[in-house]
Amino acid sequence: MKRLNLAKLVGGGLAHFQHGIDRLTAWGFRAMRKAVNKPPEQTKATVRSRVFGAARKVFGFVGEAGDSFYEKYEELKRRGPN
Image (cartoon, rainbow, N blue to C red; front, side, top):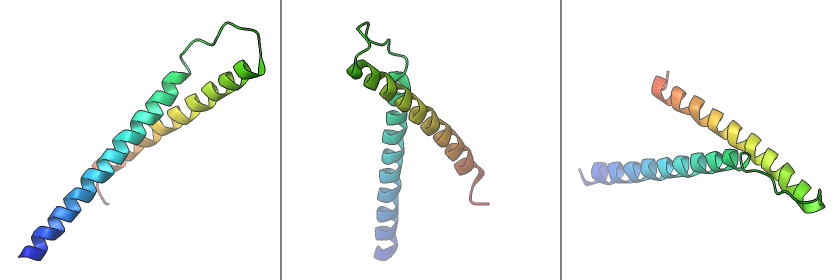
């Protein structure tokens, strides 16, 4: 009986850990996607501003891909193990 309770405790803890990681990752992807919407600096086209502009585009792409992944992942989880 104790073994079953311990197994449930460990399994529940792992599920909460996975859920936390999922939420943290989804938050990160949303933050990346929002970075694209920030207006670029109104300075000369320096190397720094070009790098930040490129980084915003990359973050936006990764954020959009991550959101798409999690939407599909949640859909698949709802379907079940079939």
